[in-house]
Length: 392
Image (cartoon, rainbow, N blue to C red; front, top):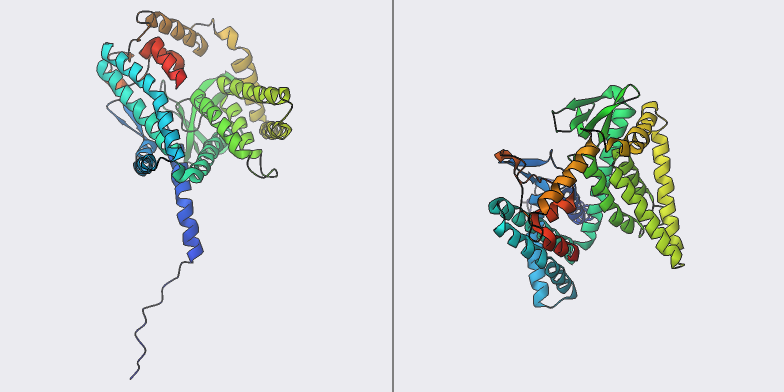
C-alpha cells in the first residue's frame, strides 16, 4: 500500500517577486487613476440634479479614510509629519469661516452652503491624502503618470485631428459643449470647435477637460511639480516629461497656460542667475525647452499641423487685442463678464454675494457666474474671502 499522501492537482505557481511588484505598483496605479479621473469634467463624471460629481472624487474619499487613521495615530505619537498636516489645515480655517459667513448672509444660503461643503471636501481630503507620508512615493509617481496620460491625450488628439484626419471623427455635441474626438472609432477626448482658418476647420484639443483653457491651466499648475520631480531623475532621462507637458499646453492653444509657462521659466532662470547658482537647474530648464520646441517642430512637419500653429500664433494669439472690441467674441465676452462681476461685487464688497445662479434653470447646479477664478472667490465671499484664500 502506497504511503505517499495524495498530492493536489498541479496549478500554476505565481512567482513571489511578481506578486511583490504587483502589490507595490497598485498604489501607484490607484493614485494615477485618482489624479487622472479628477481631471475629467464631462466624460468620467456623473451629473445628478445639475451637480457634476467626478469619479475621481470617489477614489479620493477611499484614500482619505486610511489617511485619516494614519493622521490620528501620528497626532497621538506627535510625529512631525502629522503636525505639518495639522498646520496646513489650520491655514485654511479663516477662508472657510469667511465663506461660511458669506453663505449665511447671502441670498442663496443653500447653494452657497453646498459649495462651501464641496470645497471643504475637495481641499480637505486632497490635503489629507497628498500630505500623508504613508504613500509618499506612490503619490508622487501616480501624479507623474496621470499628468503624462493627460498630456499624451492632448498630443494624440492633435495628431489625430491635424496629422491623421482620415482616421479621425470629430462630433459636435451642441452649443456650449466641446466636440468629441474619436480615432479609429475610439474616443480619445474633447476639443473646442473654433473658427475656420486658411480654408480648414480648427479644433483646440483639451483631453477630457471642459475646454482648452481648463486643460492648459491645469497642466501649467502640474508642470511646476512635474518639473521638480523630474529634476530628481538621472540626467539622461530628465527633461522629456516637462517637455511633453509644456508642448501639450501649446497644442491646447491656452494663452494663459503658455504665458504662465514662459513666466515660470524666466522667473526661475532669473532668480538662479541673480544668485549665481543653479547652473544645473538652468541647463535642465533649457533642455526641457529645447525638447519641447523639437516636439512642436516635428508636429509642424505635417501641413495641417503647421497651419494649426499658424492659427495659434496668428488669429488666436496675435489678434487677441483686436477681438477684445469685437462684439460676440470670446475675448469681448470675458471683458463684459469681468465688468459685470465687479459691478455685482460692489453691492456687497466685504462678505460677497454667495453663489449667483446663472438663471432660473435648476439643473445648473453650482455653475458660477464669473469666468475668472479670483473674481469668482471675490464675488461669492468678498474681500475677506479673497484675503483668507491668499493667506491659505
